[in-house]
Amino acid sequence: MIKLTYFNFNFWRIDILRLSLSYGKIPYELNQIKREEWLKKKKLFPFGQLPVMDLDGMLYGHTHSLAIFCANKSNLYDTNEKNALIINQVLDWANDITIKIAPSIREKNPEKAKKKREFFIKNDLNTWFYFLENLLKKASKNENFFTDRFSLADIIAWRVIYWFKSGKLDLINPNFIDDYTVLKNYFENLVNYKPLTKLKEYSEIIS
Ligand SMILES: N[C@@H](CCC(=O)N[C@@H](CS)C(=O)NCC(=O)O)C(=O)O
Image 1 (tube, rainbow, N blue to C red):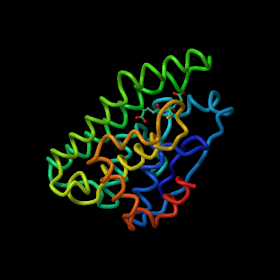
Image 2: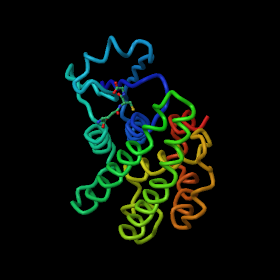
Image 3: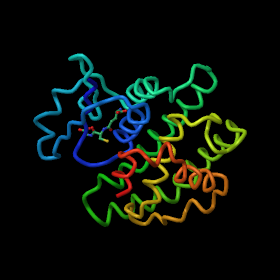
Image 4: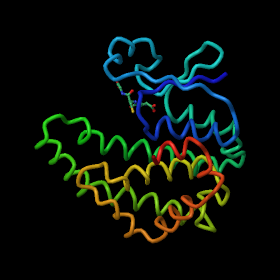
């Protein structure tokens, strides 16, 4: 049995693993750690970060590695090496945009946090969504899925766009995606894609 560990909140890093496994009907357990317990538990994990996956008693870390493992199990990765490159790039894009916005999330001082968020919006938000839309346009013929077949890339893109559209990120207009016609249509297609939306994890994430 695969056991995933993350904090006790939803975030794309863990959600893409859960959605991928669930899509392939692969059973897994989810172990959640409270923020206040983290510091004493951190040293137990291979890279001192979450998510991790316990498989046959061995702990594995890093979102990218775990996501490919889970996607492979559910036939959401690709044996075609160019398609695999597309999927990997979407994973790396998600990681990079997260690293860009992270300082404004971590900052405890509200004034400084606001400044950091404004900096992100001015310098990174549009740049990084432009990169994603461009990749979609170049990689996909149907513009419905990154590799023209539902894959891990679409789970990641849906989850990260959903995060940025959630209204939970201060100063980020949930309608910012309207400027990206192709990405907007792509997202709307995904939120109507039954094999994704019927998953219990999907309902839990959007609730
Ligand atoms: N390189 C790691 C980064 C994971 C990461 O940044 N995890 C955060 C939560 S989203 C974390 O564990 N933060 C607590 C800490 O670093 O002590 C990955 O790809 O999974």
